[in-house]
Image (cartoon, rainbow, N blue to C red; front, side, top):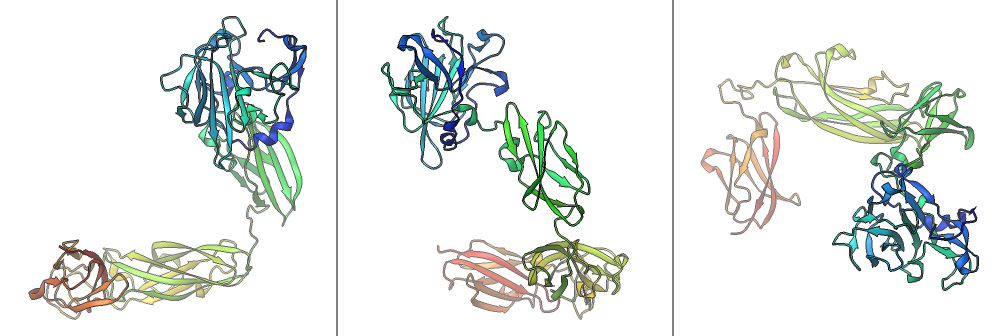
Length: 511
């Protein structure tokens, strides 16, 4: 190739892998996938060059070609493997090796590296000296070498800033001579730099998902339309007990010892997309990573917003989930349920659950405050006599039916939608959650809609300091805010009869 005599000594320069680690993952520079091309001359191949006194030369990059018919290589589109600035652009080289593009890039740590594209043609207008390109941008097409060599793309990568001496030759001598510096250690093997082009393998953590049970470990393929081969590795107490190639299979039968915890990971390989690992996942014979715990879980400070609920209204229910004893290094996770009960009983047939919160507790003595606004039912609501709050301990807890996990709060009376508390007069239903404050933002006055006589109105600034307060009446429907400074304020409305409260926000602005 390139009219030189090859003597067939192949040596991949493994000492350059440390330099490769400094360069980020590159995109494949040709259209299609890596499997669509063959390597006709690999990185690190050595030969003697007769024109230079039979001196040993080393190929500095990789030559890609369409397999089977080299003529199909001509016209394949070439793309930038990484974004950067074009430091060297030759539209047509005088020696007949066609066009050349050298891009200088900077990685996330500020380190510079260069990538070389040789034997190109059909350049678009935006490709020129000192032009900026992004990763995946079209650079040109592979051009015919017109018999000088088989048609191919020469792609090379080296660390550091652009160096004119490494630009025009696909191979460099082992030692200095023939007008060229010796092969520098900063050239790297491009084959180890290509990132996985498919989004489903962006990182090993997005690879195979592992689930473990008594004797079978299963995992998913990173892709539904690509065939991968797998290797499974299982560790116990930092000792590798299984390291087996399983081919295309996605399951493995394993007999763990009772009481022992294992770690498993899957290595998946594809000839185009390379090799990646899943992170280690723990499993045991029961399929759980935690053994049973004797920690005690209980509720504390359980309360509701009102004991006079109304159908369809939202009532705030709050509690504190706590753990007593247990392993201080372990985190326990469970749920708190909010609902209504027809009688004070632990049987599920007397409960209606309306909402659920999750909690997370560290062992020893830890508590977690939980609260939620629960929507009351709109039909058959009078049958419920209690608010009920239940703590569900973690699945590995023995403390499953303790009375400390339940809290019943008696409902004093359901407030009917067409009656005020303590009065039989018929009025329009009043829903305090539907109160509106307008205009917003406001300058001199604000008005409140859907409010009624007797509601207590208080205005606070954003620091929580009360600025004004009074009992609402229709003769004073507008609230004077002209004395307030510009800013955000909170209007707190409280109904003495029902105990309902709500807070609205408005902004005071100058003229």
